Amino acid sequence: MSRIFGWCAGAAWMLAVIGSFAACAVAGQATVAVAGNFAEPARIIAERFHAASGHEIRLSAGSTGALYAQIRKGAPYDAFLAADQERPGLLVGSGDAALGSQFTYAIGRLVLWSRDPGFLEGGGEATLRRGAFRHLAIANPKLAPYGAAAVQVLSALGVLEQVSGKLVQGQNVGQAYQFVASGSAPLGLVALSQVSGKFEGARWVVPDSLHDPIRQDAVLLLHGAANSAAADFLAFLRSDGVKSMLETFGYGAGS
Figure 1: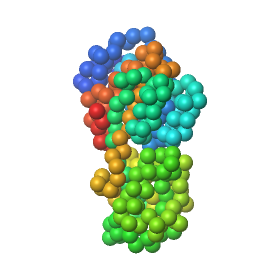
Figure 2: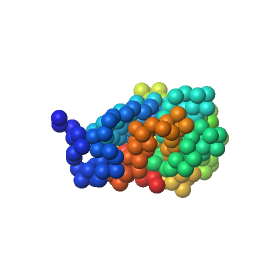
Figure 3: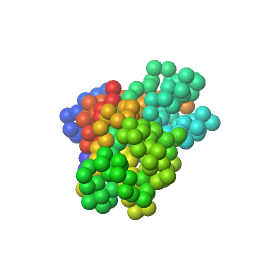
Figure 4: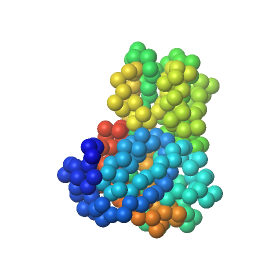
């Protein structure tokens, strides 16, 4: 079988990870709730984890707020990859997640992006200050951490009131990205991971100083406390090999 990483084989870092699991053990299965901004990286990581361990990971993507609400109502997820630290912490506090299992798996970055290569003439900050655009797409700040960070950026630049009537909100940052990709909005504050590897359009990577760090935490849920596939997947997320991949996805490495 020829894959990016073969069955119990591959690059040196992958072999080290395999050593931490029971190599070629009986395969298990886990269902993981994942924040929309991390859905594509999670898919690739899950494929590589499957190649290394045999375990199958089923992903369910959505906004962090919506997934949190589902978990609180008893949705049968085994692990949760959120886009913030707050909801995993609340789940630990409420007894819906395993004590001591919470960790930061990635640090998100925000970008101002337009499909039009000339739209950010003069720079992203100048574009926001001018306000010469019809719509600005952001994620819902009440549900999505990237949306909350976008509001912080606009507030820090002193333009929130000026552009408030032009904001169009997606339920999550994935929908905000689609507003721009489809042309419904000329630009948006979205996740850098969504435009990494894409060369069309114009972008301004927002300085981290303009918003709180977007620390994305993972946690093992009560439903998956006895699920070795879920626990092994979270351990895999913390491996050096996965951490080294995160920059190519547009993230900083977590803990």
